[in-house]
Amino acid sequence: MGYHILVVDDEKLIVKGIKFSLEQDDMEVTAAYDGEEALNLLKEQHFDLVVLDVMLPKMDGLEVCQQVRGFSQVPIIMVTAKGEDMDKIMGLEYGADDYIVKPFNILELKARIKAILRRSIRKVDEEKDKQKHQLEIRGLKIDFDSRRVFLHGKEAFLTAKEFDLLELFMLNPGKVYSRENLLDLVWGFDSPADAKTVNVHVRRLREKIEENPSEPQYIFTKWGVGYYFG
Image (cartoon, rainbow, N blue to C red):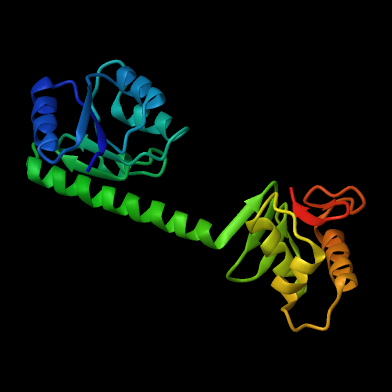
């Protein structure tokens, strides 16, 4: 699988057992034996999940969890002793994803780990899929599914052809399109539109997305050739 797991517990035999078991599933395991060591490792390295004991020397697991949430959303499974306040441990102020109570069965811990990793992968895939349908460049955001455009969070209302032009430009930054190219690609080969039509649509598009249309920051003119997104 290639997952990198951080196991944090001051009981070395527990760490050794978890490490051995996870490595059987091709996971890489790094161990830490106190809260400060764990926090430093989390700042320096990438981990896919953390198994974090509550009772730790130097800094307890709750404080580690709270500080980690200031810079990372890495999934965290808290390991607790019986009688500890589960609501407090799982409270929003700490941000743990799950907990398991000592003494625990290693197979149950592995099942929890795998379930959280599957959810994490789904979240990443969903975000990637979302990004495929949206594109943002320097504050200019285009949503291909809804055909909406936003400039620094404020919607810019484009006509169908203005949107088609912007979509083409943003998907091909740096590529220069002649007016003839744009007529063919946006209006179609058999359209009665001409080069003047392209100029008018580009001008109107600039008026809607450029702070100063006479000094464009997005759609540039290459004199004697055509237009491009820069």
